[in-house]
Image (cartoon, rainbow, N blue to C red; front, side, top):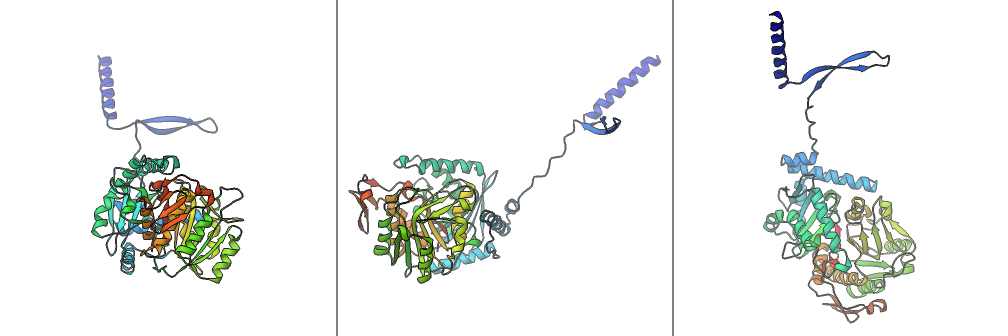
Length: 470
């Protein structure tokens, strides 16, 4: 009888133990050896899930989650300023600036120029896209785009690049799906704000992977973005010179090379330089052997050239800023050396690089390209994201300098030049470049090229304003 009772007690105890472990972990002891081969009991827990680690939110994400846009703008500015400083390995000025300061500055510039600009922060995140827009005199507005994220954005940028930058596809529209998708994510959510504030110019301050996006080619289904707004990209607003200067009485220093020791020739450069300085603008031109760094510095010491035009190869490559350069006749001016040339003394209002190419989508290359103005010390730069063609560059540059004479701001002059090409007002026929300002005979090396329509975005969407649009 006692045996039966003991057995029953044992079964009851086991059932209790099993029921209890459904709600809590079973405590057990584990023996582990020590250095002298003795053992130490270690209490452990089986079937126990440790508490999840708290998700770390960046200051930018936290501020946007809380709709604290004043803090969010300050954090975005600080974050991106640091990225450019780390890349260029130098410190940039760090003025205290708030979203209210930005709105007030935009309002002042709108009154000075008659051109209304909006600043747009495009911040790709792992799970979503964040957009913050500041318009003249107004509070920031925040839009969270849950349909996309950093990975999806980069995929579409890659698609756009693949079909837009290939000259063999310059008679197709295979770029349109990506161009329209990016427009829907980045611009469409802000259209109400843009229209309500009568915005003419978009200043885009963008995150990783987007800084070399060919913005002009984004498409709303009916029009290209450049047909609606002039466009500018900046590294950060606090790194942008916002003082407005009228260029109409300025001189241009035009320099370049048509032949190179180890790179492809640029046969249209002599015509490009002479057309700019003799037909559209007052200034001086220097070609080939006269296109040297010492001569550049000497000419700038003798006269106040507010526009410097360099018709030469310029590459923005991956790696450090030492890998990116502008080719002179006898040497390469690397990007890390540009700040030593004293471009701000006397100040250069506009630096034009007419034969650039950059590794689109590469983080280091895009930092070099988007940071070109602030690193060099010039107020604004106009450069191309990919090398298009000698005749295509000549076409755009003639239009740019023509419209600089009358446009209220630099970004608008570039927009009008791009639209002239888009609308087919500039084209190649019978060995001549046809424009609304007259025909220009091409040099012998290019006279035999086929008649060509230059309306495809391959020919004009590469060019962009970097730095101040004003």
